[in-house]
Image (tube, each protein chain N blue to C red):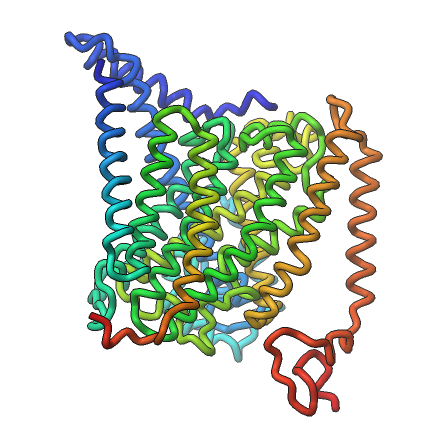
Length: 481
Length: 90
């Protein structure tokens, strides 16, 4: 388990670099530097491999966002694009299954016939055909809608780059560099598997969190230098929000480090594997806090005040266009991806299979990176679910929630982690009693809170900066009066 | 020893960046510009810490100074502005 799986990418690349160094530097008069050359070569190739893996697997995120969001909101176009796999174009059936050899597609033909009977009614064929023009091209292995990302990229590439006349030009150009470079640097410290990582210092957790905090400065500079009141407001909101939520985030991550007894991310995952308990079941409060603070940190929808479209045009990146905008957008998704990967690593056991040791021996042929990617994509589906379910909250509500609730709760969570580590942990594995008890308490509390929610409780509650009119501040239930 | 030569080159680069950042912080005309120079100064100092092997100090330097202290300075910049559109700024 802890020693890793068969997909030893790092080991292969090390062997390759040593072979290359042996046959080039090792045969020249610089033979003393053979080891250094091989090490540098290994690090460079691993950096490229990790970067390529991240950038290609990130495309799935955009696809999940489109598909899942459309499914939840019951939007016709994107939802129907998936359905085009079984309902044919213009009433004709998609017959990709007939291309399979030896009649192995027969079950799909039966499934297709059945699906057409229950879901392929005639009055929807027209819209389906319209969707087909865009997404289904008669090739079944192209995921419908998946390659729209590439079309988007081409669009960004071909657009003109404009700088506002009164913008602070140098800072306007430098700000995207700060944001994008610090975002990509995050992935140097995120391991994708036991053998797929590009840097692994002892304090990788600390480095990761340190680099995570650089981007807000870039966001502020982007908003300030555009010389536009909307971007400036977006920049200020972003700075306030990210400062407020970074402290609970850091304390929550500290609790994970305390529980695992290590500041190294790979060791945190291996601790979860060896101790037979994912941190999700030991620190459910921490998992909830991490999820909330991460959604705020990556500025996704209940907490996307810095780019609130309804009031600030597009927030701090209003004035950016073309490829700069595309790259900033990519950085935003990369941060969300990092958040999903980190949630999977810290709380869902990283690259441990679902079910842990019980199923690990039967799933040994699946490399760890596949588990981690599936977990983080599922986490991103949760992000999209949150985005579709909740509405945007006000800035003062965001800050109040962060400082008044999340910060004390993160301290409580840290206390729980310290107690678990010092009082309960016996140095072997977590007893199922502890894990089960904590999980039952957490689920019970969650159900209690969900049942006990009083829609009139917020009514008339005084908030900083709320507008006091005769009817009282707006809140849930006020429309009934 | 090329390895140490590389280190010396990196140190020279980082030291120059830190000094240039410090001078830029002082001589910049706008407060936001001096903050930008201060970012590079802090990053270069963190790089020097890394070169000397003080990894914890480097991480803390970025986490505390870049992440938090500079954001507080940033609030100072925001709250002391006279007007939003800097049209009459020289």
